[in-house]
Image 1: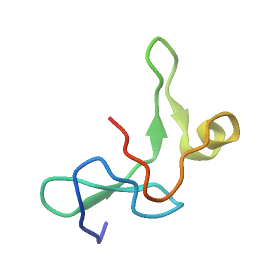
Image 2: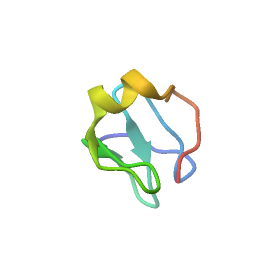
Image 3: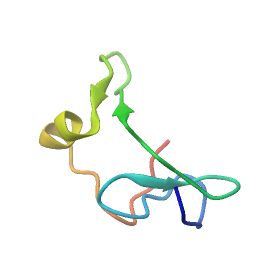
Image 4: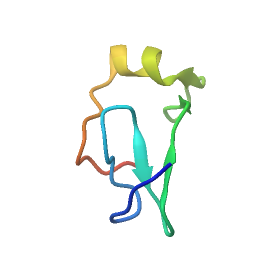
Length: 55
């Protein structure tokens, strides 16, 4: 994906996340102790917005 910024920062609402060199578009996310979910399902239960930091 195209983008840059501090590693771990969400760059847009489709969950493009900055990394050390460029950015990646997340397709699945997993909370600690949970199961991996597609981004659309994950976003139904968790608010992840542009500008947030994730790890």
